[in-house]
Image (cartoon, helix red, strand yellow):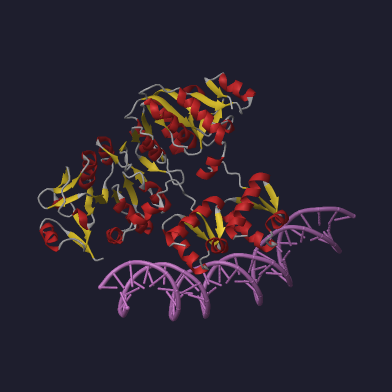
Length: 251
Length: 251
DNA sequence: CCACTTTCATTCAAAATCAATCAAAATAAA
DNA sequence: TTTATTTTGATTGATTTTGAATGAAAGTGG
């Protein structure tokens, strides 16, 4: 039985029974106890289930459930590493803006014990934030079909009621001349506003965004610092580093 | 029997019987007296139950909110019918407020072809609304752990930027003297605001809410009309109908 | 008030479950 | 093919849970 197949079967079984013992799963899948144990631990750290002594139970909070594939994809090591480093910049009790998007989503688990307060425009972020016991505020605004991000004038204006120690912003394009850019002007407005109302703005971007240019401008490079990964092209990075501070996370 | 499973069974049994003896639980679960005792102590320190000599009873707190799962399970067909009728009140191109909660969630599929615009404070509603191609705005505000509803002063104040043709509001208590009420004062504020900024306010409530009273007041009966089901007690309904319009959906 | 019964908290040893480790098997990469 | 890397299953000792035993505390009936 395949790894993914087995995990799927475990979740399946749990949806049926609410709680299930390790022995049951061993019998059902034919895998060893050790393997089931590992699977359960994985599934727990991905928030699908909750471990209990002797087995597992359905994770209490099942408000929003991305498919296994979605989660697995989001756990790409690059995003994960970048998120981990970005989170390490945060001090205790800061107030934080978390932009919508999968990279900032990866950041959430690392914030759990920092006693931060988070404001976000990402609908999908909310359940995860609450799961990690993080006080969460949501900006108002129009929900974008597809990503369920809140964007536009209304979102931006409710943002102005807050002040942030740190704003973590996702972006589609980073270019020394064109600055930061993103496809949707409504989102660009929100990102721009968040950056300008924060003491420290941090752009989180995997290497594919470097030297890319998108439709709507968010601001110039010096408006924020950048966290990216060592997958990025060295020459391009050097150019960008002349404009603003860049942290390159080793993968 | 698993530890978690056993605790679940104990709570289950209690919900059924209000009070239960240790011996009953020993028989029911097959665990020893010592184990049951330990479980009861655990459950008590987590505020799920109250120990009494010889057994345990439900801790009847006034501010008690069932989990999403519990609500989901309760009164499904009734909610569905109520939601269907409530949706039929909506005309084309109306602007609508949808309160957080499972009853209003059930309303969404019925709104698909009405070209309405929806404003909601329910995070869980957003993906479903977008899925049904309904233009969606979200109020800002603090996200409540557990239900992921947006509530409080901020949520209420962003609401004031809209005007609604119809507001659909969920509620926990409907009482001729105490009016509409709900456990959380922050949510009460949002509900009250939504009602007052709408041309027509509709309270959606299954029969269990009739004559119930909760902690925080939302408004008086005449502030809104009510849609409920024929499961409700006729005498109690008559009393309420003296104060406001009530639609009783036949099940 | 007393004797008597039931329930309680505490302790202890047995059993079950756990995380960690390591070598074998399966898979991917060279 | 050969060589890494990953996944797996068995084993280990540590930890947690469990059931029985004990005497103290609380309830019961005279």
